Amino acid sequence: MDFFLDTADLNEIKELSDLKIISGITTNPSLMSKLGIKGKQNWNNHYKKICSLIDGPVSAEVISTSYDEIIDEGLELSKLNKNIVVKVPMINDGIKAISFFSKNKIKTNCTLVFSPIQALIAAKAGATYVSPFIGRLDDIGENGLDLIESIRIIFDNYNMTTKILGASIRSNTHIEHCAEIGADVITAPYQTLKKITYHKLTDSGLKKFLDDYNKTMV
Ligand code: G3P
Image (cartoon, rainbow, N blue to C red; front, side):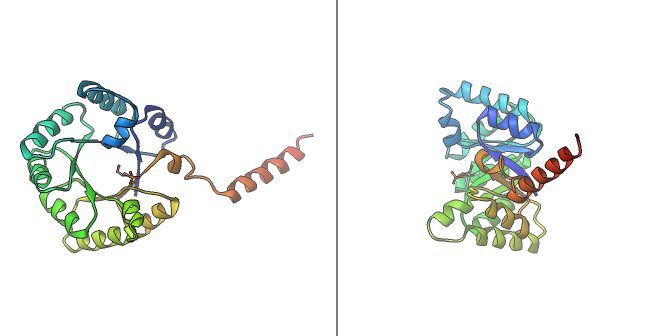
């Protein structure tokens, strides 16, 4: 399972990319707007900067919701860097656009997926990734991990190559269950991934090893 970082913050990307913890980035309009970047040209320049920090897939989301505009926007985004994955919302025009991009060898990430059927439709259209939002389903009292499990079964039934990208991750437990179920990728926030290697017994065990070593260095 691959680990992607869900952020548009360049410092966070650089840190976790250098540590080799992540191999890709997902962004969305909310994450981009948090940075205070104004204007389309500046957004595009920012996507280019992200791509310069990591040699892996970088999801950049279209803002348009009608087919023709999604195509124009997606083509523009795809030209920014070879690693750009055009992120398209799970709406009818989005599915049609994903089919177009797929035929033109442009990678896509179908976002805002909340049901197994939505994932199946996106995969049939040729999406490279589908992004089921686990945490947001948990937030409304449903079980987001059940969605990942259903999509895994469906994709395996039909040998579908679309990758399941577990998104809206809230905890390490989400990540562990995604790996057990067989998600292909998870994307998680910086605060979650920066402490992904932590375990209190690792820290206390390391301290004891170093203390014991230092006792011999008289
Ligand atoms: O980027 C899509 C997804 O990961 C958003 O997560 O925390 O806003 O539900 P969240």
